[in-house]
Length: 118
Image (cartoon, rainbow, N blue to C red; front, side, top):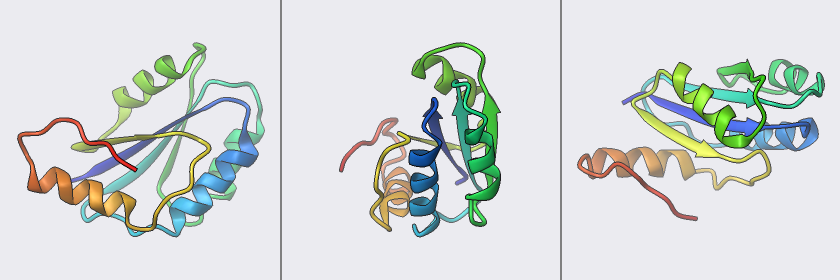
């Protein structure tokens, strides 16, 4: 099962950089994996962070002209290629097993369409 991680952000490149560095330390699920950063701010530093701080992560930068988190995430969903869509914010700290555990839950409970947790 392929996984797409979607992050909406606006004018917080420093926080996004910390999130991407934390994500780079996580165990990744099996299958294809992508990170889509949906930027609906106007800080050019966000695109730079996606290019320079990703540390080997497959980050796709998406510039979103509409304002609002929902608009940004909906545009990210439109281009996501994963079977499992994982949504997170641009200001979180990850447990190293977070993504793998969500991926396993999706495999173990194929009839479920929504997972959440700490």
